[in-house]
Amino acid sequence: MSGRFRVGAALTGIVVLTAAGLIAANGAQADPQTGAVGRARDAKLPGQDAQLLQDQQLLQAGDLESKLGSRAIGSYFDDSGELIVAVSDQATAELVRQAGAIPKLVRYTAAELYSVQAELDHLAAGSSAGQVKSWYVDPLSGTVVVTAPTGAGDLLTKRFLRAAEQNGAKVTVRRSTGRLTLTDGEFGLLGGLQVDKNTGYTCSLGFNARSSDGARIFLTAGHCTAGKPSFSRNGYILGNTRTSSFPGNDFGTVSVIDGWDQQGRVERWGTDDVTIRGYASPTIGAPVCKSGKSTKWTCGRIVAKNVTVNYGNNKVVRGLFQHTACVQAGDSGGANMSGDYAQGITSGAALISGQCMAKYGQANESYSQPIGEALSASGASLVLG
Image (cartoon, rainbow, N blue to C red):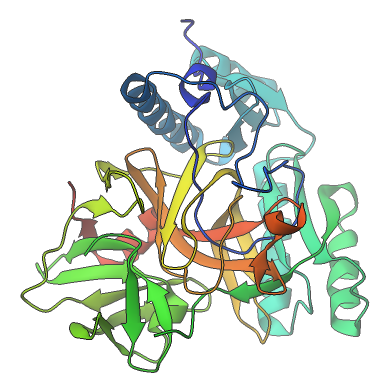
Protein backbone atom coordinates (compact mmCIF):
# COMPACT_ATOMS: atom_id res chain seq x y z
CA MET A 1 0.00 0.00 0.00
CA SER A 2 1.39 3.44 -0.92
CA GLY A 3 2.19 6.23 1.53
CA ARG A 4 -1.05 8.05 0.69
CA PHE A 5 -3.97 8.07 3.03
CA ARG A 6 -6.32 5.62 1.36
CA VAL A 7 -9.69 4.41 2.58
CA GLY A 8 -11.00 2.66 -0.51
CA ALA A 9 -9.93 -0.79 0.63
CA ALA A 10 -11.08 -0.19 4.16
CA LEU A 11 -14.43 1.36 3.34
CA THR A 12 -15.55 -0.90 0.53
CA GLY A 13 -18.20 -3.23 1.86
CA ILE A 14 -18.38 -1.80 5.35
CA VAL A 15 -21.92 -1.16 6.44
CA VAL A 16 -21.92 2.62 6.83
CA LEU A 17 -24.50 4.09 9.15
CA THR A 18 -25.08 7.82 9.57
CA ALA A 19 -26.22 10.12 12.30
CA ALA A 20 -29.74 11.44 12.24
CA GLY A 21 -29.90 15.10 11.46
CA LEU A 22 -31.36 17.63 9.01
CA ILE A 23 -32.07 15.64 5.86
CA ALA A 24 -32.54 17.12 2.38
CA ALA A 25 -31.34 16.50 -1.18
CA ASN A 26 -27.69 17.01 -2.06
CA GLY A 27 -25.18 15.85 -4.64
CA ALA A 28 -24.43 12.50 -2.99
CA GLN A 29 -26.47 9.55 -4.23
CA ALA A 30 -28.15 7.57 -1.48
CA ASP A 31 -29.65 4.13 -1.55
CA PRO A 32 -33.38 4.76 -0.96
CA GLN A 33 -33.54 1.77 1.35
CA THR A 34 -30.38 2.20 3.44
CA GLY A 35 -29.20 5.76 2.98
CA ALA A 36 -25.74 4.43 2.11
CA VAL A 37 -23.77 6.55 -0.36
CA GLY A 38 -21.25 5.59 -3.01
CA ARG A 39 -20.82 3.24 -5.91
CA ALA A 40 -18.45 0.42 -4.99
CA ARG A 41 -18.85 0.26 -1.24
CA ASP A 42 -20.85 -2.93 -0.87
CA ALA A 43 -18.28 -5.65 -1.56
CA LYS A 44 -17.41 -7.86 1.40
CA LEU A 45 -14.13 -7.38 3.26
CA PRO A 46 -12.75 -8.91 6.45
CA GLY A 47 -14.64 -6.84 9.00
CA GLN A 48 -12.10 -6.49 11.81
CA ASP A 49 -9.11 -5.69 9.58
CA ALA A 50 -11.10 -3.20 7.54
CA GLN A 51 -12.44 -1.53 10.67
CA LEU A 52 -8.98 -1.09 12.20
CA LEU A 53 -7.64 0.41 8.98
CA GLN A 54 -10.63 2.72 8.70
CA ASP A 55 -10.19 3.93 12.29
CA GLN A 56 -6.49 4.65 11.68
CA GLN A 57 -7.18 6.60 8.50
CA LEU A 58 -9.88 8.71 10.13
CA LEU A 59 -7.48 9.72 12.89
CA GLN A 60 -4.67 10.42 10.40
CA ALA A 61 -6.96 12.61 8.30
CA GLY A 62 -8.01 14.65 11.34
CA ASP A 63 -4.39 15.02 12.42
CA LEU A 64 -3.29 16.31 8.99
CA GLU A 65 -6.08 18.88 8.81
CA SER A 66 -5.27 20.01 12.36
CA LYS A 67 -1.60 20.52 11.48
CA LEU A 68 -2.40 22.53 8.36
CA GLY A 69 -4.85 24.72 10.26
CA SER A 70 -6.11 27.76 8.34
CA ARG A 71 -3.84 26.94 5.39
CA ALA A 72 -6.33 24.26 4.31
CA ILE A 73 -9.90 24.87 3.20
CA GLY A 74 -10.83 21.34 4.24
CA SER A 75 -10.38 17.69 3.36
CA TYR A 76 -12.46 14.78 2.12
CA PHE A 77 -12.24 11.17 0.94
CA ASP A 78 -13.00 10.72 -2.76
CA ASP A 79 -14.85 7.75 -4.26
CA SER A 80 -11.64 5.73 -4.55
CA GLY A 81 -10.79 6.33 -0.89
CA GLU A 82 -7.97 8.83 -1.38
CA LEU A 83 -7.71 11.71 1.10
CA ILE A 84 -8.01 15.02 -0.78
CA VAL A 85 -7.06 18.34 0.86
CA ALA A 86 -8.32 21.59 -0.68
CA VAL A 87 -5.71 24.38 -0.54
CA SER A 88 -5.22 27.72 -2.29
CA ASP A 89 -1.42 27.89 -2.73
CA GLN A 90 1.39 25.70 -4.05
CA ALA A 91 3.43 25.77 -0.83
CA THR A 92 0.61 24.21 1.17
CA ALA A 93 -0.06 21.79 -1.67
CA GLU A 94 3.51 20.53 -1.33
CA LEU A 95 3.02 20.00 2.42
CA VAL A 96 -0.05 17.93 1.65
CA ARG A 97 1.94 15.79 -0.81
CA GLN A 98 4.69 15.28 1.74
CA ALA A 99 2.09 14.05 4.22
CA GLY A 100 0.90 11.44 1.72
CA ALA A 101 -2.42 13.02 0.74
CA ILE A 102 -3.52 14.62 -2.54
CA PRO A 103 -3.81 18.43 -2.78
CA LYS A 104 -6.60 20.13 -4.72
CA LEU A 105 -5.97 23.77 -5.65
CA VAL A 106 -9.02 26.02 -5.33
CA ARG A 107 -9.50 29.69 -6.09
CA TYR A 108 -10.22 31.17 -2.66
CA THR A 109 -8.40 30.97 0.67
CA ALA A 110 -9.90 29.51 3.82
CA ALA A 111 -9.95 33.00 5.35
CA GLU A 112 -11.97 34.38 2.42
CA LEU A 113 -14.53 31.57 2.53
CA TYR A 114 -14.95 31.47 6.30
CA SER A 115 -15.36 35.24 6.25
CA VAL A 116 -18.35 34.80 3.92
CA GLN A 117 -19.82 32.14 6.22
CA ALA A 118 -19.33 34.42 9.23
CA GLU A 119 -21.16 37.25 7.44
CA LEU A 120 -24.09 34.95 6.74
CA ASP A 121 -24.05 33.72 10.36
CA HIS A 122 -24.25 37.33 11.52
CA LEU A 123 -27.12 38.12 9.15
CA ALA A 124 -29.09 35.05 10.27
CA ALA A 125 -28.56 35.75 13.98
CA GLY A 126 -29.31 39.47 13.63
CA SER A 127 -32.48 39.17 11.58
CA SER A 128 -33.46 35.95 9.84
CA ALA A 129 -32.37 33.48 7.17
CA GLY A 130 -35.97 32.91 6.11
CA GLN A 131 -36.39 29.38 4.85
CA VAL A 132 -32.72 28.92 3.89
CA LYS A 133 -31.63 25.54 5.23
CA SER A 134 -27.88 25.70 5.72
CA TRP A 135 -24.54 27.14 4.60
CA TYR A 136 -20.97 25.85 4.90
CA VAL A 137 -17.47 26.04 3.45
CA ASP A 138 -17.22 23.18 0.94
CA PRO A 139 -13.73 21.87 0.09
CA LEU A 140 -15.08 19.93 -2.92
CA SER A 141 -16.23 23.06 -4.77
CA GLY A 142 -13.96 25.56 -3.00
CA THR A 143 -16.99 27.77 -2.28
CA VAL A 144 -19.55 28.49 0.42
CA VAL A 145 -22.54 26.27 -0.36
CA VAL A 146 -25.94 27.72 0.57
CA THR A 147 -28.92 25.34 0.46
CA ALA A 148 -32.46 26.71 0.09
CA PRO A 149 -35.81 24.96 -0.41
CA THR A 150 -37.02 24.51 -3.97
CA GLY A 151 -39.56 27.19 -4.76
CA ALA A 152 -39.04 29.28 -1.61
CA GLY A 153 -39.81 32.87 -2.58
CA ASP A 154 -40.64 34.70 0.64
CA LEU A 155 -39.08 38.09 1.36
CA LEU A 156 -36.67 36.95 4.10
CA THR A 157 -35.35 34.02 2.05
CA LYS A 158 -34.83 36.25 -1.00
CA ARG A 159 -33.01 38.85 1.11
CA PHE A 160 -30.66 36.25 2.59
CA LEU A 161 -29.90 34.72 -0.82
CA ARG A 162 -29.24 38.17 -2.31
CA ALA A 163 -26.75 38.87 0.47
CA ALA A 164 -25.07 35.52 -0.17
CA GLU A 165 -24.93 36.03 -3.93
CA GLN A 166 -23.25 39.42 -3.50
CA ASN A 167 -20.11 37.40 -2.79
CA GLY A 168 -20.07 36.29 -6.43
CA ALA A 169 -18.25 33.08 -7.28
CA LYS A 170 -17.37 32.47 -3.63
CA VAL A 171 -20.94 31.23 -3.12
CA THR A 172 -22.80 28.30 -4.67
CA VAL A 173 -26.58 28.25 -4.16
CA ARG A 174 -28.24 24.84 -4.22
CA ARG A 175 -31.94 24.00 -4.10
CA SER A 176 -33.49 20.96 -2.46
CA THR A 177 -36.84 19.72 -1.20
CA GLY A 178 -37.70 18.63 2.32
CA ARG A 179 -38.71 20.66 5.36
CA LEU A 180 -36.10 21.12 8.10
CA THR A 181 -37.11 20.10 11.57
CA LEU A 182 -35.48 19.25 14.86
CA THR A 183 -35.84 15.53 15.47
CA ASP A 184 -36.99 15.32 19.04
CA GLY A 185 -40.07 13.13 19.43
CA GLU A 186 -43.28 13.40 21.40
CA PHE A 187 -43.71 9.79 22.45
CA GLY A 188 -43.60 8.32 25.49
CA LEU A 189 -27.20 3.33 29.37
CA LEU A 190 -26.09 2.80 25.93
CA GLY A 191 -25.71 5.48 23.29
CA GLY A 192 -28.75 5.67 21.02
CA LEU A 193 -31.35 4.49 23.55
CA GLN A 194 -34.61 6.35 24.16
CA VAL A 195 -34.69 8.89 26.99
CA ASP A 196 -37.92 10.63 28.04
CA LYS A 197 -38.28 14.23 29.18
CA ASN A 198 -40.70 15.22 31.94
CA THR A 199 -42.26 17.58 29.38
CA GLY A 200 -43.68 14.57 27.53
CA TYR A 201 -41.20 14.59 24.65
CA THR A 202 -38.69 11.92 23.69
CA CYS A 203 -35.05 12.13 22.61
CA SER A 204 -32.13 9.71 22.33
CA LEU A 205 -29.05 9.32 24.50
CA GLY A 206 -25.76 10.32 22.90
CA PHE A 207 -22.76 9.26 24.98
CA ASN A 208 -22.03 8.48 28.60
CA ALA A 209 -19.31 10.69 30.07
CA ARG A 210 -17.64 12.00 33.21
CA SER A 211 -17.39 15.71 33.99
CA SER A 212 -14.11 17.28 35.15
CA ASP A 213 -15.32 17.07 38.76
CA GLY A 214 -16.06 13.35 38.37
CA ALA A 215 -19.84 13.63 38.01
CA ARG A 216 -21.67 10.95 36.01
CA ILE A 217 -23.39 12.52 32.98
CA PHE A 218 -24.61 11.76 29.49
CA LEU A 219 -24.58 14.01 26.44
CA THR A 220 -27.55 14.60 24.18
CA ALA A 221 -28.85 17.36 21.90
CA GLY A 222 -29.07 20.89 23.30
CA HIS A 223 -32.61 21.35 22.02
CA CYS A 224 -33.51 18.27 24.10
CA THR A 225 -32.10 19.87 27.28
CA ALA A 226 -33.50 23.37 26.56
CA GLY A 227 -35.59 24.49 29.53
CA LYS A 228 -33.58 22.08 31.75
CA PRO A 229 -36.04 19.16 31.98
CA SER A 230 -35.49 15.98 33.95
CA PHE A 231 -35.06 12.67 32.11
CA SER A 232 -36.20 9.09 32.68
CA ARG A 233 -36.05 5.75 30.93
CA ASN A 234 -38.75 3.06 31.05
CA GLY A 235 -40.39 5.02 33.87
CA TYR A 236 -37.24 5.17 36.01
CA ILE A 237 -35.53 8.48 36.74
CA LEU A 238 -32.19 9.12 35.04
CA GLY A 239 -31.41 12.62 36.31
CA ASN A 240 -31.75 16.35 35.69
CA THR A 241 -30.30 18.59 33.00
CA ARG A 242 -26.88 19.86 34.06
CA THR A 243 -25.93 22.15 31.13
CA SER A 244 -27.62 23.15 27.89
CA SER A 245 -26.43 25.02 24.77
CA PHE A 246 -28.99 25.79 22.05
CA PRO A 247 -29.24 27.58 19.65
CA GLY A 248 -25.73 28.52 18.51
CA ASN A 249 -24.69 25.00 19.50
CA ASP A 250 -26.79 21.87 19.93
CA PHE A 251 -25.51 19.90 22.90
CA GLY A 252 -26.39 19.44 26.54
CA THR A 253 -25.48 17.28 29.52
CA VAL A 254 -27.69 15.40 31.97
CA SER A 255 -26.65 14.22 35.45
CA VAL A 256 -27.05 10.46 35.96
CA ILE A 257 -28.13 9.25 39.39
CA ASP A 258 -26.49 6.29 41.12
CA GLY A 259 -27.77 2.87 40.13
CA TRP A 260 -27.47 3.26 36.37
CA ASP A 261 -24.68 1.32 34.68
CA GLN A 262 -23.04 3.77 32.28
CA GLN A 263 -21.35 1.84 29.49
CA GLY A 264 -18.91 2.86 26.80
CA ARG A 265 -20.99 1.29 24.07
CA VAL A 266 -23.59 2.28 21.47
CA GLU A 267 -26.76 0.29 20.72
CA ARG A 268 -26.73 -1.17 17.20
CA TRP A 269 -30.29 -2.55 17.29
CA GLY A 270 -30.31 -6.23 16.47
CA THR A 271 -26.59 -6.99 16.35
CA ASP A 272 -23.54 -6.54 18.60
CA ASP A 273 -23.16 -3.17 20.31
CA VAL A 274 -20.39 -0.82 19.15
CA THR A 275 -17.56 -0.33 21.64
CA ILE A 276 -16.36 3.27 21.96
CA ARG A 277 -12.56 3.60 21.73
CA GLY A 278 -12.34 7.41 21.59
CA TYR A 279 -13.56 10.23 19.39
CA ALA A 280 -12.59 11.62 15.98
CA SER A 281 -13.05 14.85 14.08
CA PRO A 282 -15.45 14.76 11.11
CA THR A 283 -13.80 14.20 7.71
CA ILE A 284 -15.76 14.66 4.50
CA GLY A 285 -16.26 11.33 2.74
CA ALA A 286 -15.89 9.29 5.92
CA PRO A 287 -18.61 6.83 6.94
CA VAL A 288 -20.69 7.73 9.96
CA CYS A 289 -23.22 5.62 11.84
CA LYS A 290 -26.25 6.76 13.81
CA SER A 291 -28.13 5.10 16.64
CA GLY A 292 -31.45 6.54 17.72
CA LYS A 293 -34.82 5.70 19.22
CA SER A 294 -36.91 5.98 16.04
CA THR A 295 -34.88 4.89 13.01
CA LYS A 296 -32.46 2.75 15.02
CA TRP A 297 -29.17 2.17 13.12
CA THR A 298 -28.87 3.92 9.75
CA CYS A 299 -26.13 4.55 7.22
CA GLY A 300 -24.37 7.32 5.31
CA ARG A 301 -21.28 9.44 4.82
CA ILE A 302 -20.12 12.85 5.93
CA VAL A 303 -20.59 15.36 3.11
CA ALA A 304 -19.75 18.69 4.81
CA LYS A 305 -18.50 20.14 8.08
CA ASN A 306 -18.63 23.48 9.91
CA VAL A 307 -22.15 23.90 8.54
CA THR A 308 -24.47 26.65 9.77
CA VAL A 309 -28.06 25.40 9.95
CA ASN A 310 -31.27 27.45 10.14
CA TYR A 311 -34.12 25.71 11.98
CA GLY A 312 -36.32 28.79 11.72
CA ASN A 313 -37.62 31.13 14.44
CA ASN A 314 -34.05 32.42 14.98
CA LYS A 315 -32.84 28.94 15.93
CA VAL A 316 -29.52 29.02 14.04
CA VAL A 317 -26.87 26.44 14.93
CA ARG A 318 -23.23 26.73 13.79
CA GLY A 319 -20.44 24.17 13.43
CA LEU A 320 -22.53 21.08 12.60
CA PHE A 321 -21.45 18.36 10.18
CA GLN A 322 -23.70 17.16 7.37
CA HIS A 323 -24.15 13.54 6.39
CA THR A 324 -26.58 11.18 4.70
CA ALA A 325 -28.99 8.95 6.66
CA CYS A 326 -32.66 8.20 7.21
CA VAL A 327 -33.77 9.82 10.48
CA GLN A 328 -37.07 10.87 11.96
CA ALA A 329 -38.62 12.35 15.10
CA GLY A 330 -37.20 10.93 18.33
CA ASP A 331 -33.63 10.42 17.04
CA SER A 332 -32.40 13.78 18.37
CA GLY A 333 -29.42 13.50 20.69
CA GLY A 334 -28.47 10.00 19.56
CA ALA A 335 -24.92 8.73 19.09
CA ASN A 336 -22.99 9.17 15.83
CA MET A 337 -20.04 6.85 15.21
CA SER A 338 -17.34 6.34 12.59
CA GLY A 339 -16.18 2.82 13.22
CA ASP A 340 -15.34 2.62 16.93
CA TYR A 341 -14.89 6.39 17.29
CA ALA A 342 -17.54 8.85 18.45
CA GLN A 343 -18.27 11.56 15.89
CA GLY A 344 -21.24 13.54 17.12
CA ILE A 345 -24.77 13.97 18.43
CA THR A 346 -27.87 13.96 16.23
CA SER A 347 -29.36 17.43 15.71
CA GLY A 348 -32.11 17.55 13.05
CA ALA A 349 -33.39 16.53 9.64
CA ALA A 350 -35.24 17.80 6.59
CA LEU A 351 -38.25 15.52 6.20
CA ILE A 352 -41.01 14.98 3.65
CA SER A 353 -44.37 14.32 5.34
CA GLY A 354 -42.43 13.46 8.50
CA GLN A 355 -40.29 10.82 6.78
CA CYS A 356 -36.69 10.75 5.60
CA MET A 357 -36.22 11.84 2.01
CA ALA A 358 -34.62 8.57 0.88
CA LYS A 359 -38.07 7.01 1.21
CA TYR A 360 -39.11 9.29 -1.65
CA GLY A 361 -36.12 8.40 -3.82
CA GLN A 362 -34.08 11.48 -2.89
CA ALA A 363 -30.72 11.78 -1.14
CA ASN A 364 -30.82 12.67 2.54
CA GLU A 365 -29.31 15.70 4.28
CA SER A 366 -28.54 15.14 7.97
CA TYR A 367 -26.83 17.34 10.55
CA SER A 368 -25.05 16.51 13.78
CA GLN A 369 -23.16 18.31 16.53
CA PRO A 370 -19.46 17.29 16.60
CA ILE A 371 -18.69 15.47 19.84
CA GLY A 372 -15.25 17.07 20.34
CA GLU A 373 -16.71 20.55 20.77
CA ALA A 374 -19.43 19.25 23.09
CA LEU A 375 -16.91 17.47 25.31
CA SER A 376 -14.54 20.44 25.45
CA ALA A 377 -17.27 22.96 26.27
CA SER A 378 -18.75 20.65 28.92
CA GLY A 379 -15.38 19.81 30.49
CA ALA A 380 -16.20 16.14 30.02
CA SER A 381 -14.54 12.92 28.85
CA LEU A 382 -16.21 9.91 27.26
CA VAL A 383 -16.85 6.65 29.08
CA LEU A 384 -14.93 4.20 26.90
CA GLY A 385 -15.60 0.53 26.35
